[in-house]
Amino acid sequence: MNQKALAVISFGTTYTLAQDAIMQIESTLSCHAKEYDCFRAFTSKMVIAKLKREQGQFVLTPEELMEQLYQKGYKEILCQPLHIINGFEFEKMYKALRAFADKFDKIQIGRPLLTFEEDYKACCDIVMKYAPAPKEETALVFMGHGTAHYANASYCQLENTFRALGHEHVYVGTVEGFPNLDYIIGRLKKHNITRVHLMPFMIVAGDHAQNDMAGEEPDSWKSILESEGFQVTVQLDGLGSFPETGQLFASHLDKAETVSKDNFIL
View 1: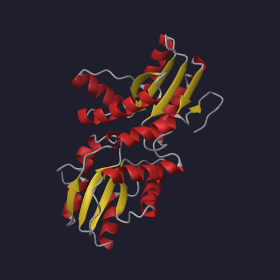
View 2: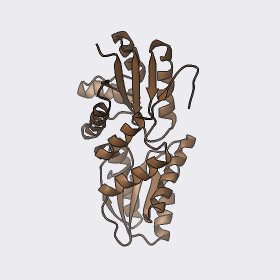
View 3: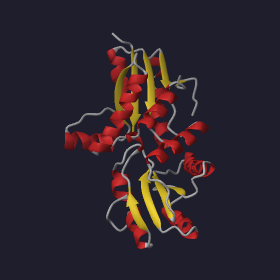
View 4: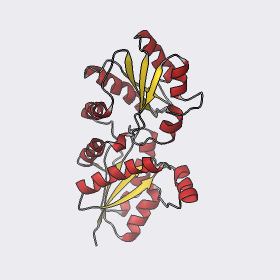
């Protein structure tokens, strides 16, 4: 029996097409770590419950997965979270896995998408490959999730990296942090932007992208921007749908850090 397991852990989603993006990354990681058996876990209990109730899907939490792997006799665990930043969700997952440190010979965890300086340039290059070519008086606006965690500063670093790479009219906002949409709108008007192309800066184009960004309700980003006089187009592609994103996560597997109860590295 193989004694090595790869745990791919994400927040989760109930959208079928968005789940395809997660599966694509899982496939890339599984091919990258061929000697490991690949498993999935979601951190959102709400998503897990809804999948079970409405779609008959059963997905484990990280704690449930680790216990299952222990019971099956696995000795080495390699984990790659599909989080964007080193925020609350990553910390919660890290602590959950750390609690199992004495049950396995080795637990290693790769870092979220935006961790190392080179990650920011890589992400900019990835999304600009799939975004429409820049046009006069047009801005590309990304919607990130955002958080009250200090790691929210990653979104500001991301936008500054776009600037450093020469993408002057790319803006990064967040749903639950800063920069928010009001701030973005003020800057768009200052730079005489008349057209906006919206894209999610999230692993999957799930509820936030479908509703908060692109929905027809008056409080969606699309509706608010239109009410402010902008012409708006929308691209519902999560980062996970781009093959290069999975490859970037795979590079983080190569830098995975060993976890122990005596070595708390958050």
